[in-house]
Image (cartoon, rainbow, N blue to C red; front, side, top):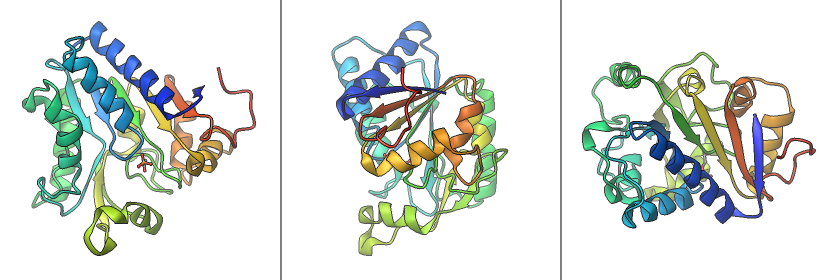
Length: 246
Ligand code: PGA
């Protein structure tokens, strides 16, 4: 796992957008897996700008989202359907037939998870997976303890994750469950780009990079991935012992 450290958040956003755009220019039919949250907003803004200025098309790309809350309708303002539509998919030339977000209201969530995995397989697998990291080291909604061999499935959210995400919900009550791409689903991606910004991620980043590889620290799995890179700002890298950064 390589780490690149940038002075600030804008540096991470520009670098990751550049990598994703470069990949799409090389191979317009790239299959992307994409995150929500605060961290990727700068990357999305830049990719949208590149598209608007005529430099980048997403028309042949395929998109999978990492996760969605269970029980939220696709038009719920806190759903990841709405997040992605407002910040990315609705602002670019994505082909709606190749945009996949888990359906949090599927009558049979387990069947929805199987359908999602099948759609990923049918698309030929994920080429580039972009991830954030939780303060507890989660990736997607794979909370500490998530089996490394897990596939897309229904998960319980940890209290800490629900607390961090609470402000998106009425009465501060975040859903208790979600559908997430599994650890093995993420690991099978040909390349993984993990973004972290801010001192509140420094502990998780250091544990993922320097402690034992363990299911109790989900992001540590990426250490054995053949092509995983961390994009960190100085704050997120501040607890690292050194020697890793390029
Ligand atoms: P954030 O979320 O980008 O909003 O910090 C990251 C995550 O929890 O994976």
